[in-house]
Length: 34
Image (cartoon, helix red, strand yellow):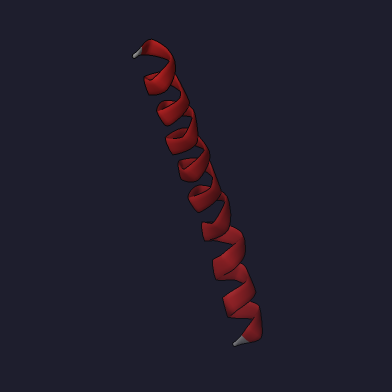
């Protein structure tokens, strides 16, 4: 069960981080262009 949880985190955390980075970049660009 621990291995399954680590596998889930390994698979999903990068996607969450990438989406957070994209959101932050979009917010910065929005401020820059407005």
